[in-house]
Image (cartoon, rainbow, N blue to C red):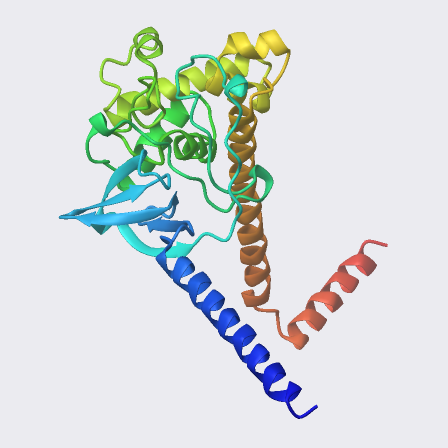
Length: 306
């Protein structure tokens, strides 16, 4: 019995040593892996771009939209106010058969952030590297452009802004892999039909895109969901499927715009209610004697009429 104890102790020591080596190997592997947790680049215009990692290059910051560095966009560093961890789950890439047909916009690139119904921010489209550095329109300038185009075609500016956000991430130089250009991602053929000579000009692009959106709304009896689906996948697809096509990207596109637009409207309603409540609290009540005098005067007037 006395001889077995050292053997048992020695065996336990060997097991512990192997376990410690295994832990070290696992830790080394984890430390060696690159960080893949997505982050959100918060922009000055109030929106964000989801990316896997980033690289500062002079005055620009390159945001890599995929882990393999195949897609990226260059953003002026001064336009980024900070970074946050993206805690949402990515949407799986769609199957090849689920890609929509050619339209005015890029339709083959899947979105990569949260589910449509719970998305807090949207990823930027992986624009072509040939488009050069991203050029973001400043908030005052963009508001003026959007307000002007929205008024011309009787659209809600918040809706137009949500479409721009989904299409280009507010990058006026955005070019999709299929050739869609500018803030509202107009294909060259569509731009020509709309009379847009320079799709990279914010005013011309938003005016043309707003006109096209208005035409689609009228075409589908102001059914916003169908109009957005047609803007993304093309009217022929909407008519082919008699509604939103069964393309994952198109469905996510429509859901995200509707979700953001509804959030804006809900926030505006809450602000309006708070302001109304504040005004009621601030408005002074007349003194008690004044109310009594007013009541007495009313009573006298009522009696005099009998």
